[in-house]
Length: 144
Image 1: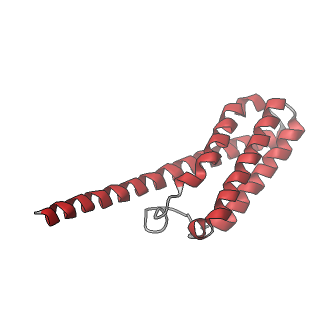
Image 2 (image 1 turned 120 degrees about the horizontal axis):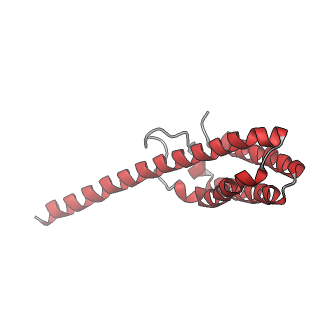
Image 3 (image 1 turned 180 degrees about the vertical axis):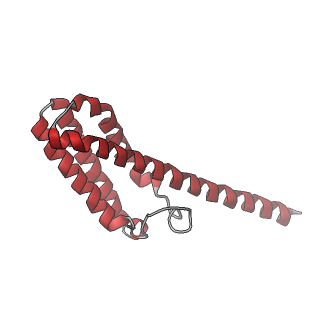
């Protein structure tokens, strides 16, 4: 009876862990999509000018999200966990991945400061730098 109870407990725990891993994959996919949508919305403003204040709240979200990125990739939440483009290097070079996320945080903080300044040239420069930081992380840690 104890073995059966132990089996049931372990099985339920494993099923719960698999569900939690699937949920984190879905959550990070949705949030990365949101970040991409924000970058796409800012692109015309960075290229041609526009209301920088309109993006302050969304950029602040990007700063916050970038700080949470490493926690959204727990061990086991890669291949075989649904539709994910996460490369195994996220876990095999986790220090590099964390550094990339920290670089994104620092860069989105600069982008927010530029948006807050209202200076178009600074915003354009920081937008381009943010796009480069995103691309660098994609090259090392995301499947195409």
